[in-house]
Image (cartoon, rainbow, N blue to C red; front, side, top):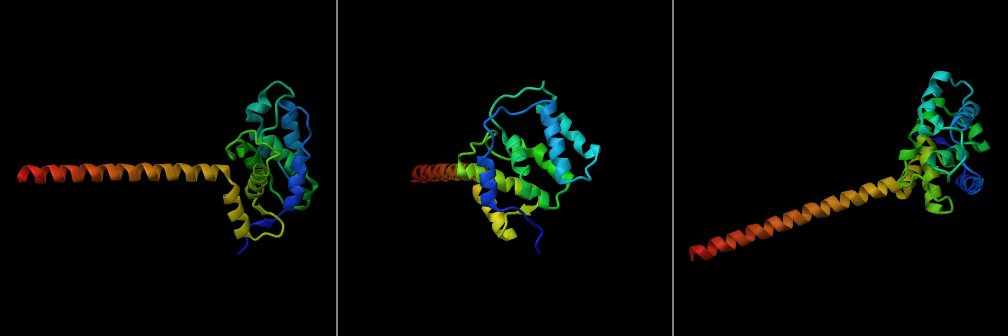
Amino acid sequence: MSNLQPGPNMRRLHQRLLAYPDSPAPQGPDLLALMHDLIYRLDPKVTGAVLAPLSQLPQCQAEPTYAGQPNVRLLMLWLLADDAFEELVLHAEALVSLILSADSLMASSCPEIQDEDQREELIRLALNGLRLKPEDETDHQARDRLLMVSSSERARVVAASRAAEERAEAIRQALAEKRAREAADKYTRE
């Protein structure tokens, strides 16, 4: 049973991210307007109640400025503005949820778009958040490839590996201490 909708072509989305303009990033009301316009373009049935949580983002409450390099949220907005997404059935609730959680999806809050792995991760996270899969991939392939490039998954695996190694070391030490006590007990009995 397929539960992911086919999405745009990965090559196209990589090219889209590489074309991110080298200009200051919007903040404040300009960023909020940008998000509202994009979501309305992708789901014209959107209501004000669905969009309301976006105004609580710290970047939307700031004074209108243009500064800094793009963060995950801005790169996702740029990615979702591609015409390929207009052809898909997207729901405003999923778009808002993705935008709200964007900053916590990747290990780096400002990914380097020239890095192919970071671009791939960003694209796959965006598609996954919208229940999409790249064109010509099965659901299984899309999930596997997301896990392969996910920096947060990699960090989780590394942390789990470290914890397992620490547990193994504690067990080795406990066994060594037990053997030492047994040897000492045997020595005192003789």
